[in-house]
Amino acid sequence: MKNETLATLLSRHSLGGKHLGEPGPDEAALRQMAEAALHAPDHAGLVPFRFALVRGAARQRMAALFETAALAAGKAADDARLDAERALRPPLTVAVLARIDLGHPVVPAHEQWAAVGGAITNFLNAAHALGFAGKMLSGHKVRHPAIQAAFCESGETLAGWISLGTPVRAPSAGHAKAGVEQVLRDWR
Ligand SMILES: Cc1cc2nc3c(=O)[nH]c(=O)nc-3n(C[C@H](O)[C@H](O)[C@H](O)COP(=O)(O)O)c2cc1C
Image (cartoon, rainbow, N blue to C red):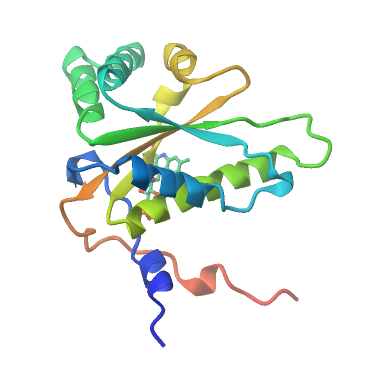
């Protein structure tokens, strides 16, 4: 029997900025994606995540920060400028912020991070179900003090950014996944 929900999940794949065109998800789509994120498993309902939309003039600000971080990481001026240009390619960028309570009496940090991962996954799956594509990216930039200061509120960790838009090409042929037997075994 064909299951369309499962077919959607199994056809999701990441696409980076150079393969994303207009339009990006609109307000209604973003609300559905956030709703999906809120339906991921979350021990004690801590909601240890939020999504910050980088839109309008904020895109240029983010690009400038990326250029600064690239220069600080030792990149040449041209390469740093390229990092800034890349940041402007996707129609929409969404920063992912985690708020991990290290002293929580019931939910250890790894469970809270698992909830963050589930939220990211549901967010991306919902984007895919709505006809959009995207990619979660982090890199050295998430640790740059100026970038952390710009994105994080007190107690937050910058997990990275999700680039979003409309796919302009199919996934590459080399996009192979691990086999099911690697992850599904009897417990003895
Ligand atoms: C939190 C997180 C951070 C990531 N950071 C990067 C990154 O900085 N660079 C990168 O190439 N892939 C990164 N990835 C992996 C990609 O988002 C993507 O999952 C990977 O390229 C595999 O593609 P697929 O999702 O189509 O299987 C990250 C994934 C997660 C969950």
